[in-house]
Length: 304
Image 1 (tube, rainbow, N blue to C red):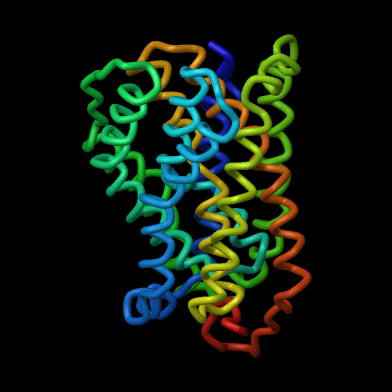
Image 2 (cartoon, rainbow, N blue to C red; image 1 turned 135 degrees about the vertical axis):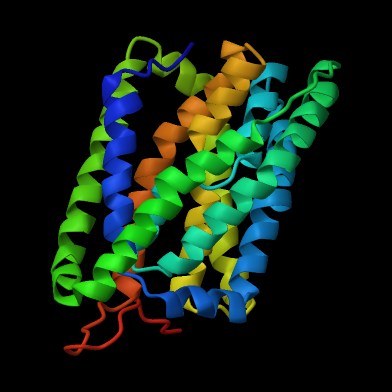
């Protein structure tokens, strides 16, 4: 197994993410979620790109780079995974449309329960000549999304509705705390595979990095070409670039029992964080900070 999941990651990270998602909820209003559903262009573009386009890009990279069969299967698996909860945090740091990011995370995660086994089995058959019955636990996925994403966001939105001034003051602290958590996560992941890091990077580093960069670039360019605002485009790009690496590791290690196939998910989980920080820096440069008048409804600017 290429990544050891110590208490810091297995226990500390979910708790930290729960707190962060409460903070993210304190930046949102019901109106912003309503806008995502009334004007669903961002949701449609982001969902199609996550579910269909990213796995197609992975297959193309496997062919172009002539990857070993196990690494190729692992790359397709991480490409077919949805965005993770950390994508919502990076969207917040980038001043993107957080409501769109959360809806994309939830919708893609639910659809992935059906599509990820299809892509996994096709990759196994295409690259290895084997086929296995892969079933992702639907109930467990619903419970995870409800506990780590939906519940804390609702708590944060209730706090914002009842105590708006406290919620406004908490926004800056959430960004700082979230950034620190992500930095600690990267350090912990690299430390956990420190002895094998160079070898693992040589195996899957170039393909994982290219998949990440192509996903982010696709999200930015296609979203803007389709007329989405910069905050919406950043949300889509972040969802495509910040994947649920934990799900990728679960499929490769728990369901396929292959440490070789888990390497792309492990390396992608490390590389996506620095790229996410660069994307956040870009967003904070091109999207101005919103100065909210006293008593005004919240929400990030949809400046074009």
